[in-house]
Amino acid sequence: MPVGGMGTVRGRRVVVAAVAVALAVLMVGAARAVARWVVETPAPAVAAQPSAELANPLPPDAETVALGRRIYLQNCAFCHGPGGQGNGRAAPGLIPPPEDLTSVGARRLTDGQLYMLISAGVPKTAMPAWEKVLNSGQRWALVTFIRAEIQK
Image 1 (cartoon, helix red, strand yellow):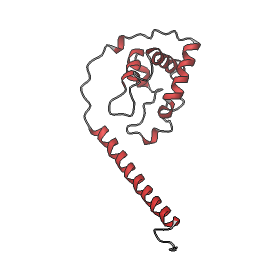
Image 2 (cartoon, rainbow, N blue to C red):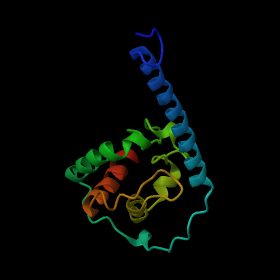
Image 3 (spheres, one colour):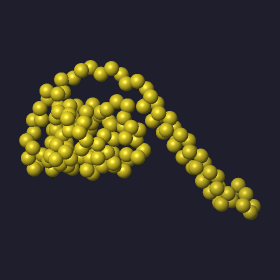
Image 4 (cartoon, rainbow, N blue to C red):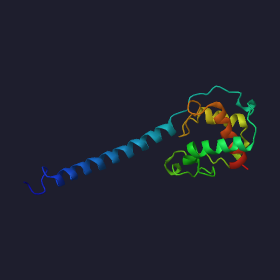
């Protein structure tokens, strides 16, 4: 049996490890290229939406806030952080970084605007559209939670 050659178990492990490292390097480079492309590509024109006039149909009661909290912790905290400051575990790798939901700018959004941002996502960011993942009531509960707990 050859010693240290390609036919040994050790030799095969070395080759597999080298291939894994090469693939990881390629994936990191590809992810960075995609992030640059997303940031540098002009955003498509978005039709004006009457989102400012949308009113939250849910009461700001404990049950709605609790539902919104569960949804936020399951879907939003990874990027926005548990307190909404944009410092979640994924934040360091996102270009641009997640919005600080406690900021003056985020507080100035109407409930309808916040609902539409959650629903449609934000172009040129990692913020996805949630309208096909969360139903309308869940998205409004999320708005209620953000107002009651994150922006209190």
